[in-house]
Length: 79
Image 1 (cartoon, rainbow, N blue to C red):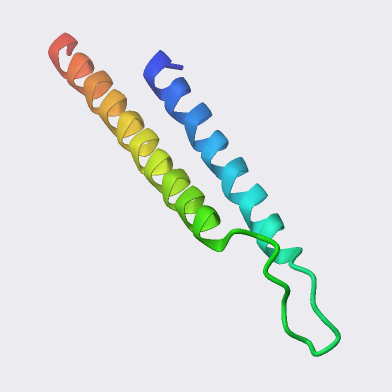
Image 2 (image 1 turned 90 degrees about the horizontal axis):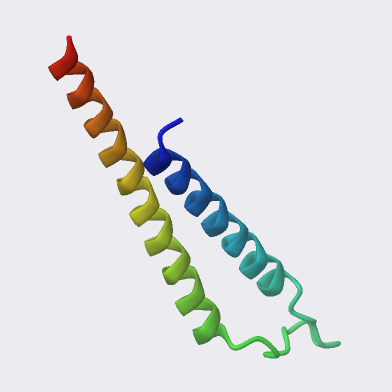
């Protein structure tokens, strides 16, 4: 597998793991006796982390697409 594609896939996996961690933190918000969540998680920081993970995912996806296009162009030249 191409180095660019492999690096992109590893980046996608890191982004996925990051989103999973954030989702677990948000899902584990404790609830008070009144049924309202206690704000023990900094929601703005979690939102920033989610956006960062999304941007990283999109960047890695673009690198995979670019590596694939380069491989296809190389095959076209050689054919």
